Length: 310
Image 1: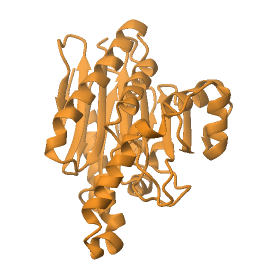
Image 2: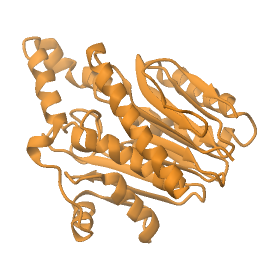
Image 3: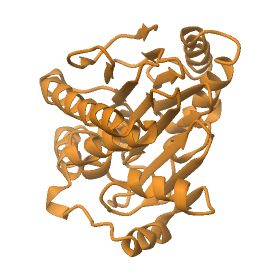
């Protein structure tokens, strides 16, 4: 059976001069995930490695690139899920390196499904996790640049700060993969919504919202977390795949969200046990990359939808 991995770097808006670095970051991450898929033939290993690469890159709103809450703190969410519908997540975790690996630990080694806040950080410390050095948190620099741009526009700074921030800093990262045994898995990680309330946990750590997988299909979502939770977007894709094609399932789920929540709200990636894969978004852009058996190099892009059928 064909092995495949598909990743995304978030849906929203990114200045075009930043696209080349994003494309390179996506390429490096998908290659890292695909190498894990080849060496371990394990879809879980593949998605965790790909997401960890994006966390460490500092290019995306996850890990080292995480944005900040209204209180000026870094609070990260992450989750992992596999074909057996095993699920593990962490939410509101203060600065640690690779929260996606901590989410995997919760899934595989703990009796729980979701651990949050300081106790999640304490668990990470007990397991030997390190922190990202504060001076290396690239997300903080991006926020400072953003505030500099809007500080002389009072209506934007006060009345529209949160709304404009939603459209710029919603770039969750995620990955879905299938191994040669037809076993699918998914992983997500994010720094959350810019200027969110302290303690806010978004869709990435919520079963069925930002992530979902079963024996047939895996999906992850990105965008405005509250809307994704309201619509259980990833669950819809996986559930619809039971009785329609992957493309039809993805279109039906995204159509539902767009109809009720509007444009510029979300994007999704999905894969099934046969190696079919696809991506859609109703935002200006959503960086994505995929690699399958038989390809010499990854396919990487920033806009548009696509569905690859076996």
